[in-house]
Image (cartoon, rainbow, N blue to C red; front, side, top):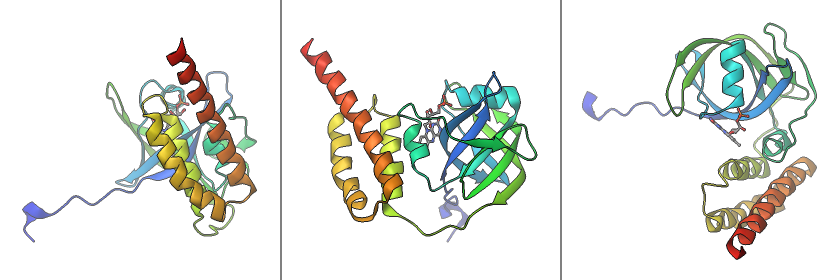
Length: 202
Ligand SMILES: Cc1cc2nc3c(=O)[nH]c(=O)nc-3n(C[C@H](O)[C@H](O)[C@H](O)COP(=O)(O)O)c2cc1C
């Protein structure tokens, strides 16, 4: 293969929960898909973002690697009040019950009008519990959370079609936490549908 044809290596995206410290010193919890580039963690928030404000002000963050998908669903259904404890090496918070976490320090910002790139150095990492295998219902909740985060940009028919497919994994493989998270997201979508049908009738 000539150099010309060589494709850039695909960059994996890992879906994580990022905790930051808000201006009042309280934890702020938000899902972010992160990448690893040149030994650094790359987080790319769309503007505006409270997490972005917190990254730039505090210059720290904590990546929480969790299989509790309620935290992903909770971010879009007014449930962000999860138990936390203090991080070890940065001024920040670690979610209770996570499988692993990484404490981050901001080292570089590539600003952009829409989606800046923030590069972080890992200053501490710890594993608290083993990975127990993939679960399709967890993946389905994360997919639906992504759709709900774009609810106002997507046609409702697209969301309904995705629900029909993702529900198969929920019915076959969910546990209690996955069912609870799924229920929150479905309720959020139902409220959105009621709001848009109300707008159409007005
Ligand atoms: C799995 C998942 C991954 C996400 N990844 C990103 C991301 O990389 N960048 C982004 O701006 N928002 C992302 N979002 C949406 C943010 O979580 C959402 O906008 C969040 O509220 C952050 O905004 P805040 O910092 O103002 O709280 C993601 C959502 C989900 C469910």
